[in-house]
Figure 1 (cartoon, rainbow, N blue to C red):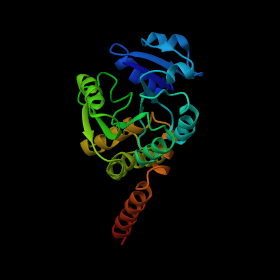
Figure 2: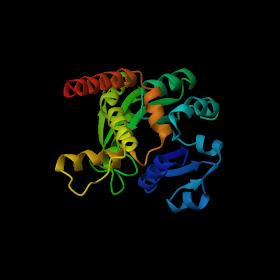
Figure 3: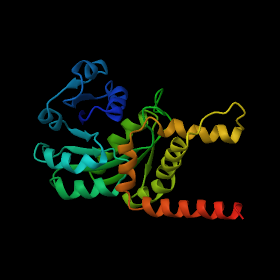
Length: 242
């Protein structure tokens, strides 16, 4: 199996680091240092070279995803597999089904981990998978590779993923961003509950605002979640202020 990774950001580097020993990886990112790519066991590549691999993984921001798929759809050979790694699922699945040729297989995924939480190992971390368009035998092969790294695969539909993600991942980042804006920090007399609350900062503070914006803008269930959460907070504030 050969893999072409488009984008060498935090997630692209993480995937390269963990899978370069198992598959041949070629990375396209004009902003990345070829030396850094080689240091993780991969080879720098042109966009055309990356797209000629048997598996192509665009590791790009959600907002840029459709533009990248439009750019590469004519470069991907029949029989290749495109795997997305966006933190929303309905949007990239619609884009890939609409734009990629019928002869190209599609697997949608969301790594429920990142460079911080998986700094030491992938073992025990969850990977959501949505089987969009690929033969069962090919999926089993991909599944064996991923589970061999200790990942726990969770199969669901794109809509189910986005609903659950709005109530978990997006809510966590929403609260975390509020804590950052509020200026939450250790006080020297922290309770165990407050210490646990501050751990949310470890989840969100290294992620970009663009990621936070995209996971809200491209998830149809995010805005209703925010409205419900804020309504609840206002109700609590009103009650305690009586």
